[in-house]
Image (cartoon, rainbow over all chains, first blue to last red):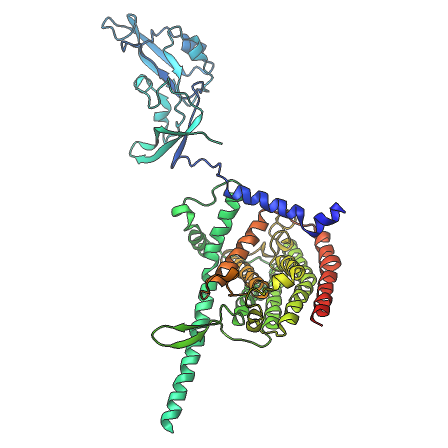
Length: 182
Length: 341
Protein backbone atom coordinates (compact mmCIF):
# COMPACT_ATOMS: atom_id res chain seq x y z
CA UNK A 1 0.00 0.00 0.00
CA UNK A 2 2.74 2.38 1.00
CA UNK A 3 4.60 1.25 -2.09
CA UNK A 4 1.69 2.15 -4.35
CA UNK A 5 1.36 5.53 -2.65
CA UNK A 6 5.06 6.10 -3.25
CA UNK A 7 4.74 5.31 -6.93
CA UNK A 8 1.58 7.29 -7.56
CA UNK A 9 2.85 10.47 -5.95
CA UNK A 10 6.44 10.14 -7.21
CA UNK A 11 7.78 10.23 -3.65
CA UNK A 12 11.24 9.02 -4.62
CA UNK A 13 11.46 11.49 -7.48
CA UNK A 14 10.49 14.36 -5.22
CA UNK A 15 13.06 13.27 -2.65
CA UNK A 16 15.73 13.23 -5.31
CA UNK A 17 14.68 16.58 -6.69
CA UNK A 18 14.72 18.19 -3.26
CA UNK A 19 18.19 16.78 -2.63
CA UNK A 20 19.58 18.20 -5.85
CA UNK A 21 17.88 21.52 -5.14
CA UNK A 22 19.56 21.59 -1.75
CA UNK A 23 22.91 20.94 -3.39
CA UNK A 24 22.19 23.61 -5.97
CA UNK A 25 21.78 26.35 -3.38
CA UNK A 26 24.56 25.13 -1.10
CA UNK A 27 28.10 26.42 -1.38
CA UNK A 28 30.36 25.02 -4.05
CA UNK A 29 33.46 23.16 -2.93
CA UNK A 30 35.53 24.28 -5.90
CA UNK A 31 38.63 26.17 -4.80
CA UNK A 32 39.23 29.07 -7.17
CA UNK A 33 42.96 28.56 -7.34
CA UNK A 34 44.92 30.47 -8.59
CA UNK A 35 42.54 33.36 -9.32
CA UNK A 36 41.09 34.08 -5.92
CA UNK A 37 42.00 31.45 -3.40
CA UNK A 38 44.97 29.41 -2.36
CA UNK A 39 45.51 26.47 -0.07
CA UNK A 40 47.77 27.28 2.86
CA UNK A 41 49.40 24.00 3.91
CA UNK A 42 49.87 22.77 7.45
CA UNK A 43 53.15 23.44 9.25
CA UNK A 44 54.15 19.81 8.74
CA UNK A 45 53.96 20.26 4.97
CA UNK A 46 57.09 19.34 3.03
CA UNK A 47 57.52 21.95 0.33
CA UNK A 48 60.51 23.90 -0.91
CA UNK A 49 63.39 23.83 1.61
CA UNK A 50 64.36 26.84 3.62
CA UNK A 51 67.74 27.68 5.13
CA UNK A 52 67.23 29.42 8.41
CA UNK A 53 69.01 31.96 10.59
CA UNK A 54 69.15 32.27 14.33
CA UNK A 55 67.70 35.18 16.28
CA UNK A 56 70.81 37.31 15.66
CA UNK A 57 70.53 36.78 11.93
CA UNK A 58 73.45 34.38 11.67
CA UNK A 59 73.21 31.44 9.32
CA UNK A 60 72.51 28.25 11.19
CA UNK A 61 74.13 26.07 8.56
CA UNK A 62 77.61 24.86 9.51
CA UNK A 63 78.17 23.02 6.21
CA UNK A 64 78.59 19.66 7.92
CA UNK A 65 77.23 17.99 4.76
CA UNK A 66 75.09 15.55 6.74
CA UNK A 67 72.08 16.49 4.64
CA UNK A 68 74.01 15.80 1.45
CA UNK A 69 75.16 12.45 2.82
CA UNK A 70 71.73 11.34 3.98
CA UNK A 71 69.92 12.49 0.84
CA UNK A 72 68.58 9.40 -0.98
CA UNK A 73 68.65 11.09 -4.37
CA UNK A 74 71.94 12.92 -3.82
CA UNK A 75 70.43 16.22 -4.85
CA UNK A 76 72.11 18.44 -2.29
CA UNK A 77 75.52 19.93 -3.01
CA UNK A 78 77.35 21.55 -0.10
CA UNK A 79 80.78 23.17 -0.41
CA UNK A 80 82.12 24.38 2.97
CA UNK A 81 84.36 27.34 3.54
CA UNK A 82 86.07 28.99 6.47
CA UNK A 83 84.74 32.31 7.65
CA UNK A 84 85.62 34.57 10.58
CA UNK A 85 83.24 37.46 9.86
CA UNK A 86 80.44 35.93 11.90
CA UNK A 87 78.10 35.16 9.01
CA UNK A 88 77.32 31.77 10.48
CA UNK A 89 77.03 30.51 14.01
CA UNK A 90 80.45 28.88 13.73
CA UNK A 91 83.51 29.67 11.62
CA UNK A 92 82.49 27.13 9.03
CA UNK A 93 79.77 28.12 6.59
CA UNK A 94 78.47 26.84 3.26
CA UNK A 95 80.12 28.46 0.25
CA UNK A 96 77.72 26.68 -2.03
CA UNK A 97 74.46 25.21 -0.94
CA UNK A 98 72.41 23.95 -3.83
CA UNK A 99 69.41 21.65 -4.07
CA UNK A 100 68.49 20.16 -7.39
CA UNK A 101 64.69 20.30 -7.21
CA UNK A 102 64.25 18.04 -10.21
CA UNK A 103 65.87 15.18 -8.31
CA UNK A 104 64.57 16.05 -4.84
CA UNK A 105 61.64 13.90 -3.75
CA UNK A 106 60.79 15.99 -0.69
CA UNK A 107 61.27 13.12 1.76
CA UNK A 108 62.50 15.41 4.54
CA UNK A 109 65.53 13.29 5.56
CA UNK A 110 67.82 16.32 5.24
CA UNK A 111 65.69 18.08 7.80
CA UNK A 112 66.01 15.12 10.18
CA UNK A 113 69.75 14.86 9.69
CA UNK A 114 70.51 18.52 10.26
CA UNK A 115 72.15 19.02 13.69
CA UNK A 116 71.51 22.78 13.78
CA UNK A 117 67.97 22.83 12.32
CA UNK A 118 69.33 24.98 9.52
CA UNK A 119 67.45 23.27 6.74
CA UNK A 120 63.70 22.92 7.07
CA UNK A 121 61.01 21.91 4.64
CA UNK A 122 58.98 25.01 3.90
CA UNK A 123 55.46 25.56 2.62
CA UNK A 124 56.05 26.88 -0.87
CA UNK A 125 54.66 24.42 -3.36
CA UNK A 126 54.48 26.47 -6.56
CA UNK A 127 57.69 25.19 -8.07
CA UNK A 128 56.72 24.85 -11.72
CA UNK A 129 58.82 26.90 -14.13
CA UNK A 130 59.73 27.20 -17.76
CA UNK A 131 63.39 26.13 -17.73
CA UNK A 132 65.65 23.87 -15.70
CA UNK A 133 67.61 26.85 -14.35
CA UNK A 134 64.97 27.67 -11.82
CA UNK A 135 64.78 24.03 -10.77
CA UNK A 136 68.02 24.60 -8.90
CA UNK A 137 67.55 26.16 -5.51
CA UNK A 138 70.78 27.89 -4.58
CA UNK A 139 71.69 29.32 -1.21
CA UNK A 140 70.37 32.81 -1.87
CA UNK A 141 66.92 31.57 -2.73
CA UNK A 142 66.80 29.20 0.22
CA UNK A 143 67.89 31.89 2.65
CA UNK A 144 65.44 34.50 1.40
CA UNK A 145 62.67 35.48 3.84
CA UNK A 146 59.46 33.55 3.28
CA UNK A 147 56.06 34.92 2.36
CA UNK A 148 54.35 32.68 4.85
CA UNK A 149 55.80 32.93 8.38
CA UNK A 150 56.77 29.64 9.95
CA UNK A 151 54.66 30.24 13.08
CA UNK A 152 51.44 30.54 11.10
CA UNK A 153 49.30 27.43 11.34
CA UNK A 154 47.93 26.14 8.12
CA UNK A 155 45.21 23.89 6.81
CA UNK A 156 42.85 26.43 5.34
CA UNK A 157 42.22 28.47 2.26
CA UNK A 158 43.39 32.04 2.06
CA UNK A 159 42.59 34.79 -0.36
CA UNK A 160 45.14 35.12 -3.12
CA UNK A 161 45.86 37.16 -6.20
CA UNK A 162 47.11 35.77 -9.48
CA UNK A 163 49.98 37.71 -11.03
CA UNK A 164 51.75 37.49 -14.34
CA UNK A 165 55.20 39.02 -14.13
CA UNK A 166 58.31 38.84 -16.25
CA UNK A 167 59.80 36.32 -13.81
CA UNK A 168 56.82 34.05 -14.23
CA UNK A 169 53.42 33.35 -12.78
CA UNK A 170 52.89 33.97 -9.11
CA UNK A 171 50.03 33.55 -6.71
CA UNK A 172 50.31 36.20 -4.01
CA UNK A 173 48.57 35.16 -0.80
CA UNK A 174 46.65 37.54 1.38
CA UNK A 175 47.22 36.11 4.86
CA UNK A 176 44.66 38.29 6.61
CA UNK A 177 41.66 36.64 5.00
CA UNK A 178 41.38 33.00 5.81
CA UNK A 179 38.48 30.63 5.58
CA UNK A 180 37.88 27.01 6.30
CA UNK A 181 37.55 24.89 3.26
CA UNK A 182 34.82 22.22 3.09
CA UNK B 1 -12.27 55.43 -54.86
CA UNK B 2 -8.67 55.19 -55.78
CA UNK B 3 -7.76 56.87 -52.50
CA UNK B 4 -9.67 54.23 -50.56
CA UNK B 5 -7.93 51.48 -52.44
CA UNK B 6 -4.55 52.93 -51.64
CA UNK B 7 -5.25 53.20 -47.91
CA UNK B 8 -6.51 49.64 -47.84
CA UNK B 9 -3.38 48.53 -49.62
CA UNK B 10 -1.24 50.34 -47.08
CA UNK B 11 -3.08 48.64 -44.25
CA UNK B 12 -2.56 45.19 -45.68
CA UNK B 13 1.04 46.10 -46.38
CA UNK B 14 1.51 47.05 -42.76
CA UNK B 15 -0.07 43.78 -41.68
CA UNK B 16 2.23 41.79 -43.93
CA UNK B 17 5.24 43.77 -42.77
CA UNK B 18 4.24 43.16 -39.16
CA UNK B 19 4.03 39.41 -39.74
CA UNK B 20 7.43 39.41 -41.42
CA UNK B 21 8.91 41.39 -38.56
CA UNK B 22 7.37 38.98 -36.06
CA UNK B 23 8.69 35.94 -37.94
CA UNK B 24 12.18 37.39 -38.10
CA UNK B 25 12.09 38.38 -34.46
CA UNK B 26 10.88 34.98 -33.28
CA UNK B 27 13.37 33.03 -35.37
CA UNK B 28 16.27 35.24 -34.34
CA UNK B 29 15.28 34.81 -30.71
CA UNK B 30 15.14 31.07 -31.17
CA UNK B 31 18.54 31.04 -32.85
CA UNK B 32 19.98 33.04 -29.98
CA UNK B 33 18.25 31.08 -27.21
CA UNK B 34 20.70 28.16 -27.03
CA UNK B 35 23.44 30.63 -26.09
CA UNK B 36 22.02 31.47 -22.65
CA UNK B 37 20.48 28.02 -22.31
CA UNK B 38 23.72 26.08 -22.68
CA UNK B 39 25.32 28.40 -20.17
CA UNK B 40 22.40 27.94 -17.81
CA UNK B 41 22.44 24.18 -18.23
CA UNK B 42 26.13 23.96 -17.40
CA UNK B 43 25.72 26.27 -14.44
CA UNK B 44 22.80 24.22 -13.11
CA UNK B 45 24.82 21.05 -13.62
CA UNK B 46 27.81 22.54 -11.86
CA UNK B 47 25.95 23.80 -8.85
CA UNK B 48 23.96 20.60 -8.44
CA UNK B 49 27.24 18.71 -8.38
CA UNK B 50 28.74 21.26 -5.95
CA UNK B 51 30.99 22.66 -8.67
CA UNK B 52 30.95 26.14 -10.12
CA UNK B 53 30.34 25.40 -13.77
CA UNK B 54 32.01 27.53 -16.45
CA UNK B 55 33.84 30.39 -14.81
CA UNK B 56 36.78 31.52 -16.90
CA UNK B 57 35.34 33.10 -20.05
CA UNK B 58 33.73 36.34 -19.02
CA UNK B 59 32.20 37.07 -15.63
CA UNK B 60 30.81 33.82 -14.23
CA UNK B 61 31.58 32.17 -17.57
CA UNK B 62 28.77 33.99 -19.33
CA UNK B 63 30.71 34.17 -22.58
CA UNK B 64 31.46 30.43 -22.61
CA UNK B 65 28.65 29.61 -25.09
CA UNK B 66 30.02 32.23 -27.47
CA UNK B 67 33.44 30.62 -27.24
CA UNK B 68 31.84 27.23 -27.85
CA UNK B 69 30.01 28.60 -30.87
CA UNK B 70 33.22 29.97 -32.35
CA UNK B 71 34.89 26.63 -31.75
CA UNK B 72 32.04 24.75 -33.45
CA UNK B 73 32.19 27.06 -36.45
CA UNK B 74 35.90 26.52 -36.99
CA UNK B 75 35.87 22.79 -36.49
CA UNK B 76 36.41 20.50 -39.42
CA UNK B 77 33.17 19.28 -40.93
CA UNK B 78 33.75 15.56 -41.18
CA UNK B 79 31.58 13.40 -43.42
CA UNK B 80 32.13 9.66 -43.01
CA UNK B 81 33.54 7.89 -46.08
CA UNK B 82 30.57 5.63 -46.71
CA UNK B 83 27.87 8.01 -45.55
CA UNK B 84 24.88 8.85 -47.70
CA UNK B 85 26.07 12.37 -48.39
CA UNK B 86 22.77 13.95 -49.37
CA UNK B 87 20.85 12.56 -46.43
CA UNK B 88 23.76 13.30 -44.11
CA UNK B 89 23.55 16.92 -45.17
CA UNK B 90 19.76 17.02 -45.05
CA UNK B 91 19.22 15.41 -41.64
CA UNK B 92 20.32 18.31 -39.41
CA UNK B 93 18.04 20.63 -41.38
CA UNK B 94 15.17 18.17 -41.06
CA UNK B 95 15.72 18.15 -37.33
CA UNK B 96 15.99 21.92 -37.07
CA UNK B 97 13.31 23.27 -39.41
CA UNK B 98 10.27 21.62 -37.72
CA UNK B 99 11.54 22.76 -34.34
CA UNK B 100 11.38 26.33 -35.61
CA UNK B 101 8.22 25.89 -37.68
CA UNK B 102 6.26 25.02 -34.56
CA UNK B 103 6.49 28.63 -33.43
CA UNK B 104 4.24 29.80 -36.26
CA UNK B 105 1.28 28.67 -34.19
CA UNK B 106 2.42 29.49 -30.68
CA UNK B 107 0.90 32.55 -29.01
CA UNK B 108 3.13 34.43 -26.59
CA UNK B 109 0.42 36.75 -25.37
CA UNK B 110 -2.87 38.23 -26.43
CA UNK B 111 -2.56 41.73 -27.85
CA UNK B 112 -0.54 44.72 -26.81
CA UNK B 113 -1.07 48.34 -27.72
CA UNK B 114 2.02 50.08 -28.98
CA UNK B 115 2.25 53.47 -27.30
CA UNK B 116 2.28 56.62 -29.49
CA UNK B 117 1.17 54.81 -32.64
CA UNK B 118 -2.03 53.55 -31.01
CA UNK B 119 -2.02 50.30 -32.90
CA UNK B 120 -2.82 46.90 -31.47
CA UNK B 121 -0.52 44.08 -32.40
CA UNK B 122 -1.08 40.45 -31.66
CA UNK B 123 1.69 38.56 -29.90
CA UNK B 124 1.49 35.54 -32.16
CA UNK B 125 2.36 34.89 -35.75
CA UNK B 126 -0.92 33.22 -36.56
CA UNK B 127 -3.89 31.97 -34.58
CA UNK B 128 -4.59 28.66 -36.25
CA UNK B 129 -7.89 27.03 -35.47
CA UNK B 130 -6.03 23.71 -35.44
CA UNK B 131 -3.05 25.08 -33.51
CA UNK B 132 -2.38 22.17 -31.21
CA UNK B 133 -2.80 19.66 -34.02
CA UNK B 134 -0.33 21.60 -36.14
CA UNK B 135 2.20 21.73 -33.32
CA UNK B 136 1.97 18.03 -32.57
CA UNK B 137 2.24 17.16 -36.26
CA UNK B 138 5.20 19.43 -36.98
CA UNK B 139 7.13 18.57 -33.85
CA UNK B 140 6.58 14.91 -34.69
CA UNK B 141 8.28 15.59 -38.02
CA UNK B 142 11.58 16.44 -36.38
CA UNK B 143 12.15 12.78 -35.58
CA UNK B 144 12.91 12.31 -39.29
CA UNK B 145 16.06 14.34 -38.76
CA UNK B 146 17.18 11.95 -36.05
CA UNK B 147 16.31 8.79 -37.98
CA UNK B 148 17.82 9.96 -41.26
CA UNK B 149 20.88 11.35 -39.50
CA UNK B 150 21.41 8.02 -37.80
CA UNK B 151 20.82 6.13 -41.03
CA UNK B 152 22.94 8.33 -43.29
CA UNK B 153 25.96 8.17 -40.98
CA UNK B 154 26.46 4.51 -41.88
CA UNK B 155 27.58 3.74 -38.37
CA UNK B 156 26.05 1.15 -36.11
CA UNK B 157 25.82 3.43 -33.09
CA UNK B 158 24.16 6.19 -35.08
CA UNK B 159 21.75 3.74 -36.69
CA UNK B 160 20.84 2.29 -33.30
CA UNK B 161 20.23 5.77 -31.96
CA UNK B 162 18.02 6.64 -34.90
CA UNK B 163 15.99 3.45 -34.54
CA UNK B 164 15.64 3.96 -30.81
CA UNK B 165 14.45 7.53 -31.31
CA UNK B 166 11.82 6.46 -33.84
CA UNK B 167 10.45 3.77 -31.53
CA UNK B 168 10.48 6.19 -28.62
CA UNK B 169 8.69 8.91 -30.58
CA UNK B 170 5.97 6.51 -31.70
CA UNK B 171 5.41 5.27 -28.15
CA UNK B 172 5.27 8.65 -26.48
CA UNK B 173 3.63 10.77 -29.18
CA UNK B 174 0.38 8.92 -28.50
CA UNK B 175 0.38 9.56 -24.77
CA UNK B 176 1.38 13.16 -25.41
CA UNK B 177 -1.44 13.71 -27.87
CA UNK B 178 -3.98 12.06 -25.60
CA UNK B 179 -2.90 14.28 -22.71
CA UNK B 180 -3.51 17.26 -25.00
CA UNK B 181 -6.90 15.90 -26.05
CA UNK B 182 -8.25 16.22 -22.51
CA UNK B 183 -7.20 19.87 -22.48
CA UNK B 184 -8.84 20.40 -25.83
CA UNK B 185 -12.04 18.87 -24.47
CA UNK B 186 -12.12 21.37 -21.62
CA UNK B 187 -11.41 24.40 -23.80
CA UNK B 188 -13.65 23.08 -26.58
CA UNK B 189 -11.20 24.34 -29.15
CA UNK B 190 -7.97 23.32 -30.86
CA UNK B 191 -6.76 26.90 -31.03
CA UNK B 192 -4.08 27.66 -28.46
CA UNK B 193 -5.47 31.16 -28.03
CA UNK B 194 -8.86 29.76 -27.02
CA UNK B 195 -7.20 27.23 -24.72
CA UNK B 196 -5.41 30.01 -22.87
CA UNK B 197 -8.50 32.23 -22.76
CA UNK B 198 -10.46 29.33 -21.26
CA UNK B 199 -7.98 29.33 -18.35
CA UNK B 200 -8.63 32.90 -17.22
CA UNK B 201 -9.00 33.81 -13.53
CA UNK B 202 -6.95 30.93 -12.20
CA UNK B 203 -9.05 28.26 -13.87
CA UNK B 204 -5.77 26.73 -14.91
CA UNK B 205 -5.91 23.29 -16.41
CA UNK B 206 -3.38 21.98 -13.89
CA UNK B 207 -6.21 22.12 -11.32
CA UNK B 208 -8.58 20.12 -13.49
CA UNK B 209 -5.99 17.96 -15.20
CA UNK B 210 -3.28 16.97 -12.73
CA UNK B 211 -3.02 13.48 -14.19
CA UNK B 212 -3.02 14.87 -17.70
CA UNK B 213 -0.21 17.21 -16.77
CA UNK B 214 1.95 14.44 -15.35
CA UNK B 215 1.38 12.32 -18.45
CA UNK B 216 2.18 15.31 -20.63
CA UNK B 217 5.36 16.07 -18.70
CA UNK B 218 6.69 12.51 -18.83
CA UNK B 219 5.81 12.07 -22.49
CA UNK B 220 7.33 15.47 -23.28
CA UNK B 221 10.58 14.50 -21.58
CA UNK B 222 10.69 11.46 -23.84
CA UNK B 223 9.78 13.53 -26.89
CA UNK B 224 12.67 15.94 -26.46
CA UNK B 225 15.15 13.14 -25.72
CA UNK B 226 16.25 14.39 -22.37
CA UNK B 227 17.30 12.43 -19.34
CA UNK B 228 15.69 10.21 -18.01
CA UNK B 229 14.59 9.26 -21.54
CA UNK B 230 17.58 10.24 -23.64
CA UNK B 231 18.10 6.78 -25.06
CA UNK B 232 18.71 7.93 -28.67
CA UNK B 233 21.90 9.58 -27.46
CA UNK B 234 22.73 7.26 -24.61
CA UNK B 235 26.43 7.85 -23.93
CA UNK B 236 26.82 4.62 -22.01
CA UNK B 237 25.78 2.28 -24.78
CA UNK B 238 25.74 4.29 -28.01
CA UNK B 239 28.69 6.70 -27.64
CA UNK B 240 26.60 9.70 -28.72
CA UNK B 241 23.69 8.05 -30.48
CA UNK B 242 22.29 9.42 -33.71
CA UNK B 243 24.75 12.33 -33.97
CA UNK B 244 27.90 10.32 -33.26
CA UNK B 245 29.33 11.00 -36.74
CA UNK B 246 28.36 14.64 -36.87
CA UNK B 247 30.74 17.47 -36.17
CA UNK B 248 31.02 21.23 -36.44
CA UNK B 249 27.94 23.17 -37.54
CA UNK B 250 25.92 20.09 -38.46
CA UNK B 251 26.25 18.87 -34.91
CA UNK B 252 25.34 22.29 -33.59
CA UNK B 253 22.16 22.20 -35.70
CA UNK B 254 21.14 19.05 -33.86
CA UNK B 255 21.90 20.70 -30.55
CA UNK B 256 19.98 23.80 -31.60
CA UNK B 257 16.99 21.65 -32.53
CA UNK B 258 17.19 19.91 -29.17
CA UNK B 259 17.23 23.13 -27.20
CA UNK B 260 14.45 24.68 -29.26
CA UNK B 261 12.41 21.52 -28.72
CA UNK B 262 12.94 21.90 -24.99
CA UNK B 263 11.68 25.46 -25.16
CA UNK B 264 8.71 24.31 -27.26
CA UNK B 265 7.73 21.71 -24.72
CA UNK B 266 8.04 24.24 -21.89
CA UNK B 267 5.90 26.67 -23.84
CA UNK B 268 3.30 23.97 -24.49
CA UNK B 269 3.22 22.98 -20.82
CA UNK B 270 2.62 26.61 -19.90
CA UNK B 271 -0.06 27.17 -22.53
CA UNK B 272 -1.91 23.91 -22.00
CA UNK B 273 -1.74 23.56 -18.23
CA UNK B 274 -0.48 26.72 -16.58
CA UNK B 275 -2.71 29.37 -18.01
CA UNK B 276 -0.39 30.79 -20.63
CA UNK B 277 0.15 34.49 -20.06
CA UNK B 278 -2.48 34.80 -17.32
CA UNK B 279 -0.96 36.13 -14.14
CA UNK B 280 -0.80 33.74 -11.18
CA UNK B 281 -2.46 34.52 -7.84
CA UNK B 282 -4.10 37.87 -8.73
CA UNK B 283 -0.77 39.49 -9.50
CA UNK B 284 -0.84 42.32 -12.03
CA UNK B 285 -0.93 41.38 -15.69
CA UNK B 286 2.22 42.31 -17.54
CA UNK B 287 2.38 41.43 -21.23
CA UNK B 288 4.69 38.50 -21.97
CA UNK B 289 6.39 38.69 -18.54
CA UNK B 290 4.39 35.94 -16.85
CA UNK B 291 4.58 33.80 -19.94
CA UNK B 292 8.37 34.06 -20.08
CA UNK B 293 8.65 33.51 -16.33
CA UNK B 294 6.60 30.32 -16.47
CA UNK B 295 8.49 29.04 -19.50
CA UNK B 296 11.79 29.78 -17.77
CA UNK B 297 10.64 27.81 -14.76
CA UNK B 298 9.86 24.81 -16.92
CA UNK B 299 13.17 25.03 -18.73
CA UNK B 300 14.88 25.10 -15.35
CA UNK B 301 12.76 22.17 -14.25
CA UNK B 302 13.88 20.09 -17.23
CA UNK B 303 17.52 20.88 -16.44
CA UNK B 304 16.93 20.10 -12.80
CA UNK B 305 15.47 16.70 -13.71
CA UNK B 306 18.37 16.01 -16.03
CA UNK B 307 20.88 16.19 -13.23
CA UNK B 308 18.71 14.36 -10.72
CA UNK B 309 17.41 11.24 -12.38
CA UNK B 310 19.37 8.39 -13.95
CA UNK B 311 18.58 7.13 -17.42
CA UNK B 312 15.93 4.48 -17.90
CA UNK B 313 16.68 1.16 -19.51
CA UNK B 314 15.19 0.68 -22.95
CA UNK B 315 12.63 -1.96 -21.95
CA UNK B 316 11.60 0.21 -19.01
CA UNK B 317 11.05 3.08 -21.43
CA UNK B 318 8.76 0.95 -23.57
CA UNK B 319 6.92 -0.40 -20.52
CA UNK B 320 6.27 3.08 -19.19
CA UNK B 321 5.11 4.30 -22.58
CA UNK B 322 2.77 1.51 -23.58
CA UNK B 323 1.66 -0.13 -20.34
CA UNK B 324 1.34 2.86 -18.04
CA UNK B 325 1.10 6.18 -19.86
CA UNK B 326 -1.16 5.06 -22.70
CA UNK B 327 -3.88 3.44 -20.52
CA UNK B 328 -3.65 6.31 -18.04
CA UNK B 329 -4.06 8.92 -20.74
CA UNK B 330 -7.08 7.07 -22.14
CA UNK B 331 -8.53 6.89 -18.63
CA UNK B 332 -7.87 10.60 -18.25
CA UNK B 333 -9.86 11.34 -21.39
CA UNK B 334 -12.69 9.11 -20.19
CA UNK B 335 -12.87 10.79 -16.78
CA UNK B 336 -12.65 14.26 -18.32
CA UNK B 337 -15.47 13.35 -20.68
CA UNK B 338 -17.65 12.08 -17.83
CA UNK B 339 -17.10 15.28 -15.86
CA UNK B 340 -17.91 17.44 -18.87
CA UNK B 341 -21.16 15.57 -19.34
